[in-house]
Each structure stands twice: as structure tokens, then as C-alpha cells.
Length: 182
Image (cartoon, rainbow, N blue to C red; front, side, top):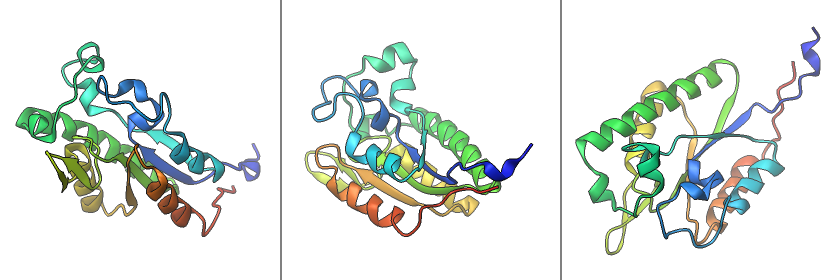
């Protein structure tokens, strides 16, 4: 078999589940994008970056049936030992995937989170006011990546204003279009 014609991209973006599927958001909070957070995802598509959808800890907590019909909860409501362990399980699974990809020559170009998410925020939570705090899943994920020596950019997407994340992705992905040849 001739592998020299394999043109797959070696760049991968690991993205929070709801960036590709807003249906997994808590009830009543989807305001700007009914399905896909398209401005952010379009940047990845335009630059031939593979998109790997990470699990949604909140929708899977207590079972998918319960999770899909959940009401919004704050970081403080989720900040329990049980939920942290739930997130740790997903973070460890995500790390295994990232480790395998890196070992096979792929680049984790970015990990995209969702600002104000109790699980997937990269920078901000809302607690009556905006505070600088990561989501529980992303906090654990960043720690595991760092311990493993996997370096990548964690980018927070604010669904009410995607332009900062879009600009950051443009800057990050512009220097080279990376294809895996052979």
C-alpha cells in the first residue's frame, strides 16, 4: 500500500462537546447559536484542523436522560467531590487520547472550552459577577496535560461574543498549514 499519498492533516483541535452540539446545553441558556457555534468551528474547517469532540461532563452526570434535561447550575453547585471525580474520569480518558495522538505525530493545536461553563470554562465563571476561574473539567484536564508534558493552547469561547476566540485561532493557526505527508 502506498502511504505517500496520505494527505490527512496532523493538526487537531479538541473541543468542548457543546461547541458542536448546543442541544447538550442546560435548558434555557442557548441564545446565539441553535446548533453549532459556527464562527469558531468554521475557522478550524477552513484550516483543515481535525475536530475531536470531548465529552460533556455535565450532561453525563447522573445519566444522560437526566443530564439532557438539566437546569443551569453554578460552579459552586458542581464543585463537589463526586462531580470532581466524574470530571477526573473524563479528563483521564481525554489525556489518553491526546497522548496517543501526540505519540503518532499529531499536534494538539488547541483545546477549546466554553467560558462561564462550570465544567469547561478556560478563564471565567459567573458568580453574581464575572470571576477568573476555570471549569472543573478543564482545571483537571490542564493539570493532566501539564504533568504529561503535552503543551497546547487552551482557548475559551464566549458564545455571546466569539470574535476574541476566532481572532486567537486565526493567530494560532495562520503560521502554517500542516499536512501529514507519508
